[in-house]
Every structure is written in C-alpha cells, then in structure tokens.
Image 1: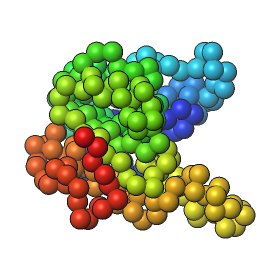
Image 2: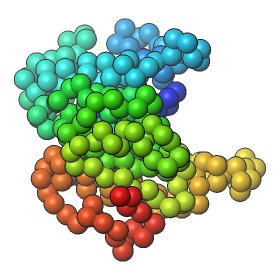
Image 3: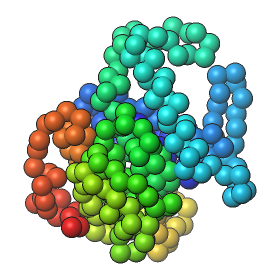
Image 4: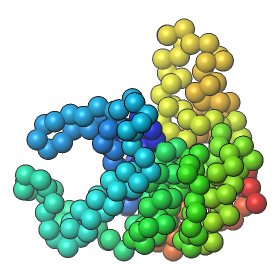
Length: 256
C-alpha cells in the first residue's frame, strides 16, 4: 500500500512502486479524497481542499487506507469489489494475500496513513516512512517493523520524529541519504531536473527540489532500501543491505 503526501497524488512515487512490482509485489496506490485530484466510478472529480480548517487529517488518511484494505480482503476471498460490478482482470481475484501487507508513505502519507494505521490495524505488518514530519507524534507503542528514510525531517530537526522513534518497540531503522531534501525520495528527484534548463531554473532553485543528491543515485536508493525492507519483513528473505553502511551506497547513513 502507498499513501501520498499532502496535496500530492498516488503516481508521485512511481520509481518505488515499479521496483516493488517488478519483484512480484502487488502495489496498491491511493488518492486521498479532498487531498488529491480524485475521480469516482460515477465520473465525479473532486479537487484538493486548500482551506486548512477542513483539510484531510491523519484519521481521514488512515480511514481511506482501511477501506482499501477491506476491498483487498474482498479480492483475496474471490469477491468483486468493483462499484459497477465490472469484470476483474483475469487472475486478480484470489491473488492477494491479506496476511502479508506492507505499507509506505511519503511526508503526510508516512505519518497520517502508515504510522497511524499500523497503530490501529494489525493487518499492516511492516511500514516505511519517507521523510515524514510524524505529526501528530505517535502516542502508542508499535511492535511491528518500521523504517524511517529521513531527509529534511530528521530526529534532530523534528521533535515529533524523535518522539515517534521512541515508540517503535519492534524492529526499527533510521537511514538518511546525504544531500537529500524532502522531495528527494520521490519522482520529483528525476522529473524536476529535466525541464530545469528550459524553464530557466537557477541552480539554487533546482537544489531546493533535489538537494545535492543526483537523480541517478536517488533512484537507486529508492529502489534498493524499501525493497530490502519488505523482502526481509514480508518474505523473510534476509540480505545484508539493512545491516549497516554499504559500499554500494556510501551516501546512506545509518542513524542509531
């Protein structure tokens, strides 16, 4: 399961989604109603709310994901959850394992959906937070595996991240890619540099989007670490990438 950041969309982490799918995972991405452009089966299109007062909160994101998990259980049981009863792609019904679910989210999606949902819903067995501010901070203990890939919102810079870290009572890991910024763990790291010269973007403006981490390295990091995490905790395939600093990724620091 993937949950996007505030006013983002479900396709903004295609680099990670495609990598997981290429290794046999079924990846479900969600557009959160009123926080992203959302089209419903009846053709209605809802746009993000810009007024902060009624904006989607952590409980709303978590409720969205819980609804989708329920529909995944329907599929696993061979039922058709399509709103209009349309035929499912061949082989989809019964193909999912509702007892082997992992989740990741960027920014608000790492806080509001992934961490919040894992506290309340045992169906999610392992979670990854991609530079999430972790607001509100976790107040309950989580005993399942959780990995933080931090950039801007580190434990040293964001008090809620430090508080949430203390509530992780199971397997946990905090890593950071040197030179990364908030949008480094996502497709923007690759997409923004492409039109930068044509649009007259200055080096400073470009670094605000990408940091000093090059697109090619950012892609490899996004591909390698979430995959290693879910392979370990969902498939019980133990590699060595998560054991400590790697020669293949010298820019990735492990934070005790």
